[in-house]
Length: 88
Length: 207
Picture 1 (tube, each protein chain N blue to C red):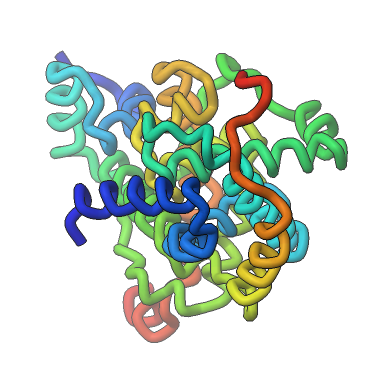
Picture 2 (cartoon, each protein chain N blue to C red):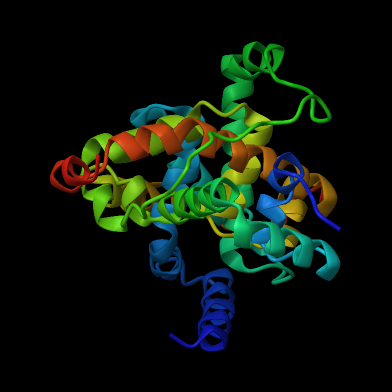
């Protein structure tokens, strides 16, 4: 069985997460072996996922940590961690 | 670091905080400052609101620490608190209401990716450039909230599908559908831009 490009596109995320049923994975795999466009879509999606996960994308503002810990010190002394009154 | 050791250590740290050693809380959260901040920034879209949300989330986690039962990882629990804090803040600013008007329904249309003939790997070093980081931040921020939440938890915070489903109180099937659409939207938006933004020298030679 052969599948068309636009059906392959529906499986890209599942393929990258390795969550497709084996027979679907096999079909997608076979299509990718000979389809340059779908391979480029897959590679670019994977590449974008890797970049998105990179810690450099979101930099902490200068002084973030100092301000956070100062605020925590200030407020932690006025509260005690305890179970909430009405657990939900 | 050995994962099990770090889980055990956190459990011990939490126990001693609850027993009164509050100072340990500073050490407990240190590894998660960045995760919490980026989660907040993706929602709030400006640094000062994001910092505020992050601080509130850490405070809330401290106050609720006794509710943490170790059923999830501490980091997962902390990120869920951040997500709720950011959602609450947005709701109060009523941004969500405006955004949800142009949200596409989940079952609606199929997202076609950007078509490319080939793809040359963009290395992580490209992120040293501010314009590239900004491109990624903008692409995430421009996703509608349903897709942004899933993408952030799964692809930015690197939660598993199951952890993402639990944090958002949706099924794993829904996570997969939204994640697929979110990733395709990111590819559609970013692939053409990144392709044109590669290092000048190399692209000049190859074009």
